[in-house]
Image (cartoon, rainbow, N blue to C red):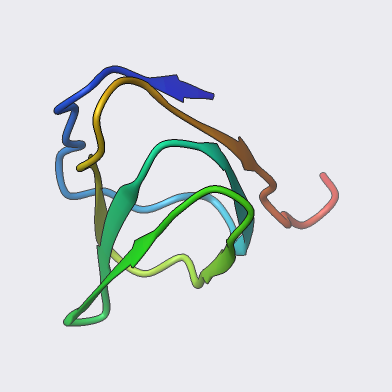
Length: 72
């Protein structure tokens, strides 16, 4: 996914947890009462809790987002 410079998501959840891989840019993730920043080549794990995401770098941010969900 690609996020414009300055983009900030509303508070939200995802259907399932999973790893996120930052390809480009710098992102700030607030989840479970904690905030962390990640840059290119870094991987972080979203747990599925309520969270926000913000592109805090210069230019676009690009990430690979994987969600682990139950088979339907």
